[in-house]
Image: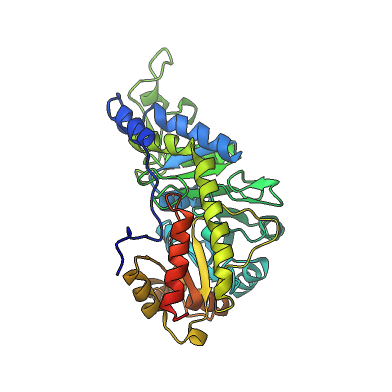
Length: 400
């Protein structure tokens, strides 16, 4: 139906300097963990305003590492909003932690304090130790309020910030990742995110204890720190020098390391983050102006006061019943016109694994959001003309 290039809902932006950075790393001495890993960590921590950044191989690993580093033990429980990617829940389950699903605002998809409170009242299988706000599509609810709620109840806050690199809140006074209202924040550098590493993730924190635990746990639980060694006879020589080959494992974990190759790309991408975010914000502003003509049947997620999102996704709410069209048909019609869309997300509590593991619960906000949501194309390589094409395709697809 169209000769235009197909518009996926998201796509990486890779430029010549990114290719050059990766090529340089490939010609270097390190392909796995080398100097570029530490360089990326320092640059990322500075970018978001945190004391520490620990890079790993994906966002799921970041969530897993943060939970274990925070001392959440097998059998404990955490509160997770149902409207998120499955990894927010599955990373905890893989660590032996139980999940209590919270409802969300039906118009934003975000967990608010009242939803966390209801989940806490409902309870779960073990002692509740933490709450996981998810910054869906790049928006945040009220980090200060959620932090105060958690602190009053002795809970840690671990942010799933995989969608929210570059998001500012509190009228720009705070930035996601600086951990002003959390113990740690977890990021993803999947190709459709704000910056790409191929695959990659990171944890930011202002706690040196959490940072040290994350670094140890991302590498099998190995420690080469002499002050931690327990078997001193094997660790040290007669003159108290450290045996250079020696390390100890005092807690088992996986290999979650990121490579110098990935971090070379991450460093190059991080250097252009402001430009990439600006492009996303400009495109969203153009969407805002164009979608007015389709309101109220089709509208963007409503704005939240004091928030400047990093805009991972362009999420719309569609009144399919009023339009007389189902979501499958709309997505197919858009695809025929060269427009790719996606649904973010099926509520996690509805996946078979979690339905079998936990009792079925009614989460009306998550259900209402899921039934109406659709993600339109959004990535820095798009033009305003592409936005016009998407909205025109929407109009034609619903018979306007």
